[in-house]
Image (cartoon, rainbow, N blue to C red; front, side, top):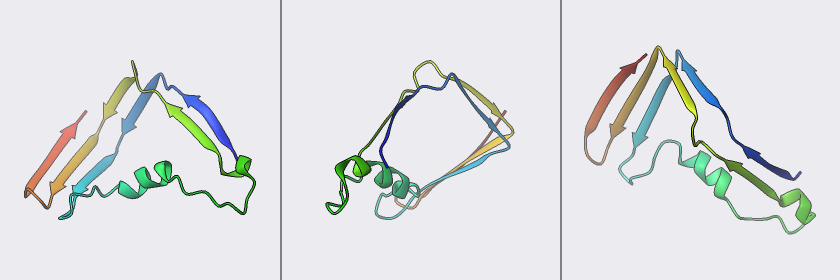
Length: 88
């Protein structure tokens, strides 16, 4: 099915979140699969073009970010960096 739209949130709240960011030995992030799923341009030519069309624009300008009881964990296998930040 086709997905179109502009997403422009006014605020984002993180409460009791643990965000883990890891860069592996090949310099790939642990969330690369998410990026690839939104940027994959392969189209199934057996389906109607309308079913293969998606365009979502995410605008994060001027978004209020409210962080409470949140932990950010960063680890890089390439640089050996290990960082933990508690926020809120």
